[in-house]
Length: 380
Image (cartoon, rainbow, N blue to C red; front, side, top):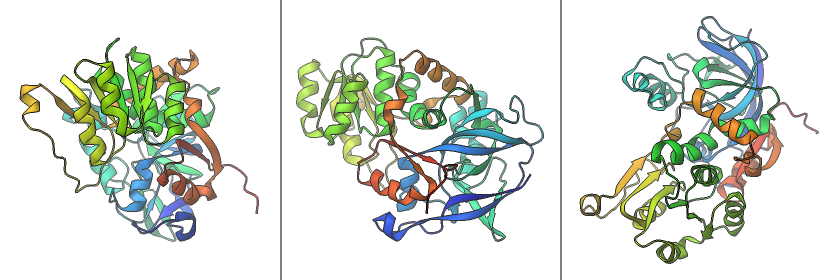
């Protein structure tokens, strides 16, 4: 069935802050077509506000306009299109932002987060297969990373939807769709951190703190959390980091804890200084795993000789090298056991109309994971 949905739509990138005043995201009535083959219609119950959303607003991550923003979410299935396996109406689902075809070289090799057609569709603002299901007054609206989560409803490819148990609160479930996959996955999958190995995490937003949680699960020691914001450092310690410091103190602290430097540096800030600092903090045979998204024209300057003489590595990680259908249930099981206290990352729930204000808080570094509740009744 076709539905009408209140959705946060961005028409132009690069507007100035404060976003609460310039209002780059407009809440519009969007017409959503019925799901096609391989697609499902989902009522969005909770959506996380992530730096990847902010990077589209600022123009740091160029996307086709107009676009219905948001990519980390959880909700309930309303309708299922033809040829959808394993998903039915009323199922609760987490939405992951990387659809996959299952047939390209990367999918066949198990690297579904690097699906070639899926990546192309995301760049083009389409669903997998090039389809568009959103419009306002007959004018096409592009999908954001195959989800468009800041909305009452969304049509997604079935590979973006992972069925979960009905008892998991949606505002917690949503965080598994990006922050946990990207951050914890970088530690557990991309790096494959082993018990007793040293880890530092640079940048303590939702993804960085999820990396701290992943390091705790892996049994890393020490775990050094690095961020200029004291409250985020304190939260990292509460989540299991053994040490926390300001970036200016990182070299001294890690030097005092290790003979040669950390084995793993997880870079979650998405800026060149953090990426270069991460490389400077690893020891011989160490590796940086970078999950932050820098500007498209950003360039790194690293000592080339270290790649051979010290066997250092710099590794990119997209969505934590995860397979959502495998890793989301695994992480939820850890949450049930009390090993992944994801609820501590959530620092507020807000109605959809607060989206521009929430983007300001994120840009200021004041927020970890804000959750929008599109179904929340709003007062005038």
